[in-house]
Length: 197
Image (cartoon, rainbow, N blue to C red; front, top):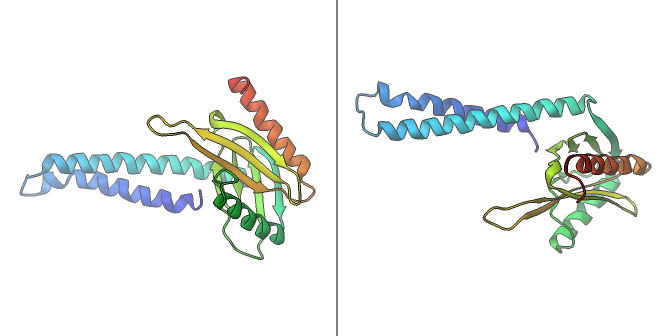
């Protein structure tokens, strides 16, 4: 998620406005629609304030990761590699050769991208994601220049088909050992929590 602070602020505003709107029918002269105001305002308050609380926790985890807490691997991908990866990855998605990549690298030529992988989350170029360990279905490191680290996930659908996606990002030259350590870490955590796949 990019800019969780902005989304959190919007959710907070929605929650506060919802809480304030609950009181509208009690101060208005006309009490028509009192139940609807309370229901809609209460719903907005609960959803907005709940989302704001969750996003605040995400922002704290993001700050800790940027500060080095729980970091497994960290590397910088040079601008040329980043540009080539973005183009190749989008083309492969369009041709349905690869799963949808949940990480969105903005197309900004000439800028390097920092990859930080933590114990339970990762950040690629400012795009922060928690790693849903229960949904992890595999991890791999492709050969080639550059190597690509991919974590594959399946989110079960109750009423609809399962959602398949991946976190896929380039590995800096010379950081292949760190990428293999990431794969080993997540495989070890998965096996400790859930056993064999």
